[in-house]
Image (cartoon, rainbow, N blue to C red; front, side, top):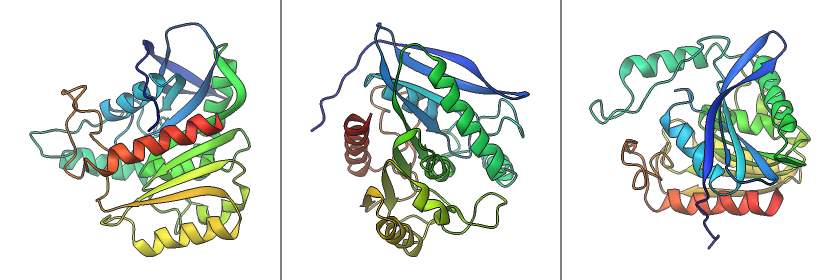
Length: 265
């Protein structure tokens, strides 16, 4: 069992410069002085909402500087959709908009935003200079896989990343074809009952990671898409629990995430 910490943190909204663009981002970091590993958190199609902010905070409480950039900054600045107990999920309109914006994303722009987030973290005086981590969910799981191909990214946790084997946001080459560029360690988390990602896709990703001799681990859980959403509800009841949340899979996955970052950052 990884030793959990619950240190005091500071949170704030910041702007990440990227040429003429300023990317909104949520920054959480330990309140005490020191230098820490840094981790980028990539959101689902619903923006940097309370779930993503919560994940960012929980990572910071483990002793990291964590930042969640808004990946829809060019398309829909300020967009975020909250999970609702009343709607028993994300609202149909919120889901429609999130999917609409997701379909407008361009690979090179997102890749540029990842690089800008890395550059921003490097300017912070409390960030160690020995590499950066990444974690993402669904859309963000795909983006995390993209980020893993950058040499600064030493540890990546990709949760149920959609479209890795079939698409690359407007590019002809699917993201899986860039697997050989991954230089750090990647942990990939799948759900066996995922209605958005087939088991064939999962197996294809695992086979490519093995073929390219990438340092990796693959975790498969008897759960549905979004099984991690709601892990921290007990600590913060204002965050609604996703119906796919799995009380066995999510805590186990979290322990593996902590192990990944602890061993590589």
